[in-house]
Image 1: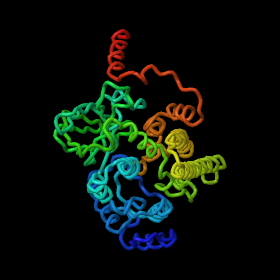
Image 2: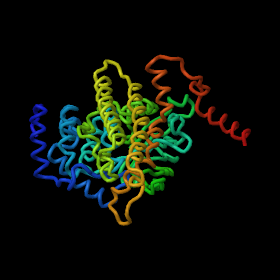
Image 3: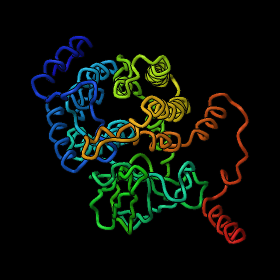
Image 4: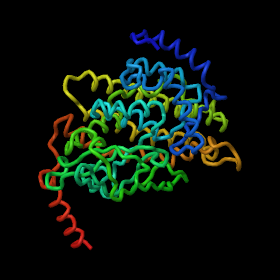
Length: 420
């Protein structure tokens, strides 16, 4: 690919030709499987091969800097590639892939040293090193700053101990971005640091979590005296909350949002197919349900593009704006899942034994619909963030924001004892 910036339409034509020559098409372009949150190991292995092919051709990391293996192009170029690649078999990394190329990769670019990025970003883009997040904990979900995993200095190394939960795709990952507490004697937001941790390091244990849909897209992780060096630090020591805010922007739909999803140009193909199977294509109620879902799909897509544009063009960082995108997802995903059930009735919930995996997609989507209103901060957390940090309304009272975190934990133990 040329080092000079090329026109979006020219790029689109070149990408279209390369895809047709180098990748396999899905048999039915209107029913492309999502790959699920937890693809099979074989699918992940094949995904690595495809990802390497994309990387070698310059189509992995379209908006990433060229010095780290990307193409250095714009979000418009990336949207064009995603639209053109939609009919083709792309890497199936599940939820891990979505997090890795957005929240993780972008946060590394924003906060990693040049030496760190030279070591880590090219293998990430090439699919040689898959990444996950060691982020939330059993006692720190929406209150992310309340984590208790600890990294203590030991000579010229760090020793990390603690546990993490809801780590998307960790069973397939080679590396993890791990948030740890490096200072207990300052308020909770000020004593955090991020580390790059190999998932096969001595002391790391990853266990998949069985979910309501029977899958295991999320994992719990245990870190028992895991040793890493100073080169593993991402950002500055004790300034990890700044990195976390960056990650939340991308995770909640900001940053390059809108570049990573193709525009929903066709009328909700999955729902149209569901109505066809239920013989309801001429039913006015069914048609209204499909139209409602299609409108919501487009609203979500264009909200993401608008938020990404505003956040990127602002002279001062506005991470709180990403909460609008996350709240929209948490609100609209459950609605869409319910629409599918209303459309399909029994056909949405039942399928023949031995049927294709996709036959269960509607039921699984309904079971998983509430994830979007909880993961990466609940809908209520997003509303609080919008009200306080965007609209300027009074903040909720806080008892622990200005106290050393060690004191907060001691007080919490006392309260737990009294309640018990």
